[in-house]
Amino acid sequence: MIEQRTLTPECGPEQGFLDPAFQPVLPRILPQLALLTGLGDRSQEAARKAVAGLGQAGARTCIDGGSRLLLSLRAEASASRKVSVLTPLASPDGSQRALWEQRWMGPGCLPKPWRIEAFPPQGEAWKAAREAARASSRLERLQQLQARLGPLGSIRFVARSSSGTGCWIGWQLDRSSGPLEALRSCGLEDLWTPASRLFGLLLGRPPRPRSRPWSLALWLSPEEESLRLGTSLWGFQPEDAAKRVRLRRTVEEVGGDACFLEAAYKLLAAARPRQRRRACLGRAAELEIRNENITGLEIFLRPLAA
Image (cartoon, rainbow, N blue to C red; front, side, top):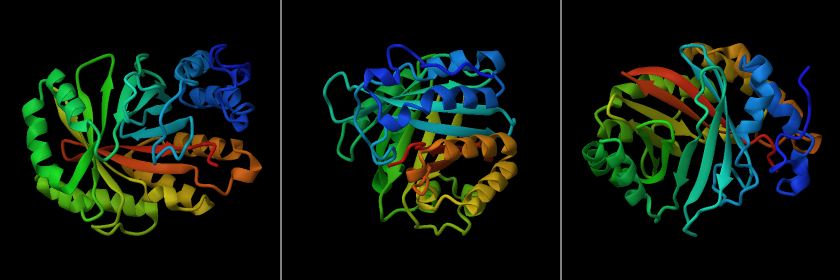
């Protein structure tokens, strides 16, 4: 049995930072999720570190829906087990950008967090993207991508790890653009066939080329380049047994640990207050593609949806 106690004195429920619905859940649910990843007796400490930033004021975005906490579950072809906790941070310069910190739990996960900057449509995203790409020695590549993707959408987030070189640059596609068009602009249109098949399995119906909303993100680093294609269409689907079955089958297709993801998803669904269980738990889903192969699926969850 895992000892159930307040995660940290600085950000525990008694400090008043959290919605009351979080109070009976966080000290219990996060160590259990860490345990599911295979951390064993390190689960409690991993859970403490994962919420190190919780309680700091931060802006709200359309994905988090006003929540102070987001979780993600990741399935990879290597069958590794990973859970991440995303918490909002205060913007140091008072700008409109939203800052998030992402910390991972699971065997082999780096202890240092990711820092994610999310921008409004007319924000300072291009400046932040240029700085991140320059630090990763990929400024020229970013300029090429912006020339192709800029007419189809806008840069909405920049994510960087504090433990190494490289960054994710993410574009939110406009209502008049679709994922196939975005992939085609980058010379990657052949990826739409396997990606649409897996999204169809996850959603229970084939996604239309101009269905929306969609996002496209590129990992820029000196060593390699990867792509992530995401949609929040999955978040609009009702929470029922059929949704979990589709999720399990999709994870199996990717080559991930379906038992882990299903157990974690059920754990989160059952932990929500009874009056909130009809609200959508899932918020968005992303497929990661590397060397023209789908290598991972990450689902983003708002465990205490209002």
